Image (cartoon, rainbow, N blue to C red):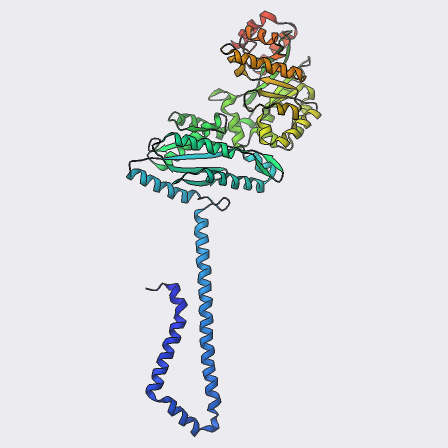
Length: 531
């Protein structure tokens, strides 16, 4: 049976053929040609010999018009079918990356679920979220952000195994669903390949930078009997991967449920907590390891939640980065600290951590100096601490910010040195004033003599470059003595004092300003602070 489109195209031709056949049969049966000839001879004054050809030509023209219209209809039908196909594709695929959208991906996952149920098998769901993607949009524009998303989609497709489906779920979120074979290690290898592939540097218009991804993994039916539950659990695992340092993957664990509920609760409250100054500065003292003199404090933060009590920064800093309020949080804590310590009489240094996300803020240096000037605090009293991540994310921007900070009189310290992607090239290319040796080295020194040699190398490296070294995580007097003997300049840790509120820090400062060399009595003060 012909469909409507074909019928519309071929109807004019059928009418022409049927009309021609019917006319021929009728004319032959009625002998109209002979009668017409006799009639024209009998009425020559009517000039029928001219009228009849004109009528025949009109018929030919009508046939031609029908053929032309038929061709038009065929072209319109082809265009309509093309548009319908494109509309169907757009309805099922993401317009930017070409990957299946959330709706079509859901259909693919349902098919996997059906196959898994029928074969008593299983499938895995991977939730992929880019780390610190928002600053790229804010700094370089949405055009660059779109190109990053397209490149990430291509890299995911390049790693996609047979039988798997990928999707852009929205924003900078992607997902993969695939049958779970007998080789459980293949899923882990896939997650590692995706993290590694996405983290490869990008080069757009001569600007080189990197993004990374956190991946959460959940499996059906082990982690949920419904698709929605499996997807939710993969998201939970993905947030756990972010909390573990980003650019990694994590499996869903049922214990994550309560942790994610807490995270979502804090996420809804964080912006309001910043405005209400519930997130406040805590200070941890820093000492000269040779003389025992108090040289300054590191400014840390604590969330004094009205219901949950004191919340540690590990539970809200990464959250603030993810939802885009880290700059507001940082400004608020620094402003509170500067207002409190600006009037302290002795020249102290105050160290303050900057998030790598903040380096994408074009007005970062101006905002920091404005906070210092507003509080009446000397600019050279502030020392910002950065991690090596800022060099990986955008080395050119990092160099610009560091240069701007030092030109404004603000010192720059390289935090967690030796812990991650440490490169001596950073010390050659970027002028920093201090190296901070990560606490993990101090903690592991006694159990592994090689770590002690690494610490000694870092100290000697700083000395050869004219850069001060600070050791974090000093727990005992023996740690402090060992570091001092090996030439480390400064130290901080629970041996001296835990981070404390501003008023306690002021009392601590006043007491130690009267005692330039705390010596052995320092441990007693630390115990008092801990109490």
